[in-house]
Image (cartoon, rainbow, N blue to C red; front, side, top):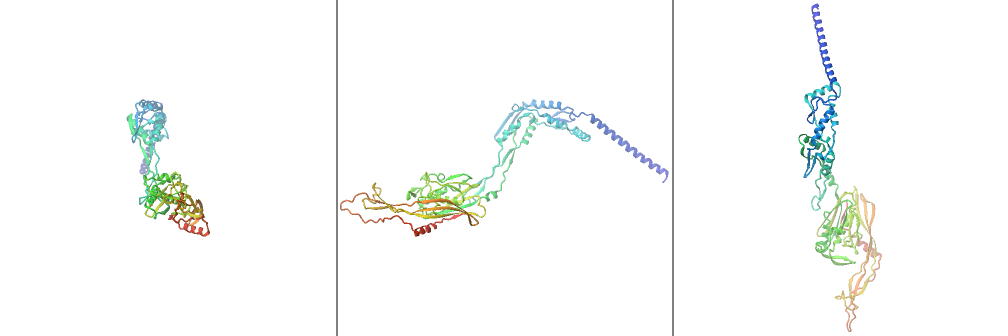
Length: 510
């Protein structure tokens, strides 16, 4: 290579080195200048371009800015009229309604840090950004309206509500008996948004009306899960096929009072209170009733069959029975110890829902039977309930008793001594017990006695005339047969037991 070319290359290399050193020197000079300028800049003043609530605080110290901003906020406080509305309610506040509070200083301290914190590069970038774009800061009016939080909370108490779960709708006559109502959403005041609206509004006007923003939180439920937890717990029916139309009317009318009834947990219900007075005005008719061991006519006769049918359905559903009484005579439509006699002011059927969920009662009837169905939470898997009546023994009657008709009550039947008329036949009585059996997969795991009843025997009653026969008078042949006191034999007991065993009304339990 020639000396001339080597010399040219060497000259170029030196030129590059010189140029690089010069550029570095210039950059270093600029850096030092900027650093020097930054170091000379005060650290306790706001950067140029900083405004607070529209007030230019560039170059001010924190105390200077605090005085100016506080004065601006406080001077307009007396002019404030704030109206908050929600639906048809409104709340009006004036500036004087609030306590004097000045919490501007913490806000200014945070703003003052911008451009004064971090390393030199960060401080420089922050300052340049503020100078170019500006920094507009708003101080919340919460800082000067002392106690506004408490006032907002007082209003929120009047507005906010907890969500309400949908309620079960029970229509026993509908194809789908159970459905859900619409639940209510929870309502919560959107406090952050409300304060923002107040601040934004008071920046431009001192009298403003704001509709309080709220957040609605829907109450979400699983409809299938809720309705799926309601099932038939029991069903019971009795026959009144041989009853008169008046008696059928009374039985069905009384049961209809329970159709659609819902009993909440721990709630009690009275048969007499639910059905009301058994009067003609309430739609009841004359039919046979049991009074003092005999059948007589009375308004509402047959209602005891309604209470008895309901009673047995409740027992099978494992609903707690608080009060139940037996008749003086056995009822033909249920086994012994499973009747429930009702009489206004004397005997009632009272029960309580001791389950953890509501129970629902459905009643209906046709021309031959009356039915009661109880719905509620399902039994445990494999669990079921049944009832058992135990006939203990026959209580023998005392035969016929003869009394003279001294009052003339039966004068159309007997007048003279030696004339007899049978008022009633003697009836044997029974001792019996009632049990509830709890089964698991068809096997009895527990048995509980719920009744021990005595259906007392009834003596027969024969009346005799009280007047002496006149001279020459004679009595017709007496066709009244006198019945002696009953003697109970093994055959008697077996016959009664067999008869009672046939009294098995239709019952259902899962």
